[in-house]
Length: 273
Image (cartoon, rainbow, N blue to C red; front, side, top):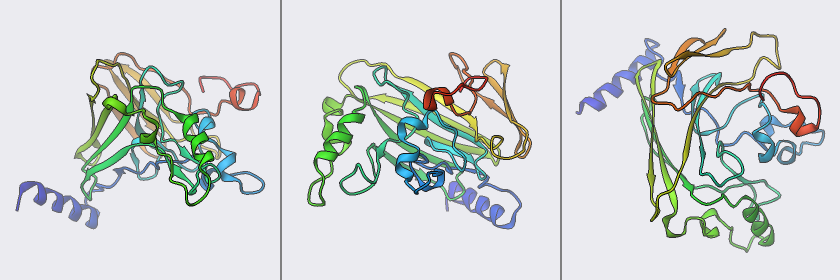
């Protein structure tokens, strides 16, 4: 039996007996929190319309989070995921796009290309592949063409049908997670340009706390720059963690708060939404 299998058997046994909680951190972020009943406060239960994909980047979720290649603690308090920008899209690629139940001719449907390639039961290792087009993501075309194809007999219009991957003009974005210990987690991102020409891509790993302080009395957690690409993350329930970025160009901070000005035309709260 290989050493890798022996090590994983040991981690599973430690988790089973409570000696070590190897599943404290894992792929617990959902693929899609927007447009679901989990975040629905509409008067008539119209979850797909209440919190749209367009609103998702400006609204603080209440009951969960979403993200590409997301990892978090098992209470989903401190979250880690990946944002990407190809220089053409009007927004960052932070979460998966899809059609709502009314927009898709076969119901709800994610319109992305991604693959979960590997994972151990303890989540000590996990690997995912996401494919990012180098051209602008065809959000509106996917909505309009699928609306035109209404009816159960019609084929779904998928992302690859739009031609955005023609001539292999896309990036393979490989995301790996590995644990040295239950609270010692490494995230590695490897980018491959599959196209025939050079192309630029902006890679933005993201760390944030789920907003629990706006809904119930609790202290607001903090992320503080310690210099040298090191962050200090503090949460009253989760504890204190250090987060290090290798060769980061710069660190950008915002508040995980709803942007009331953009969404509802109301005065925005203090800070950076």
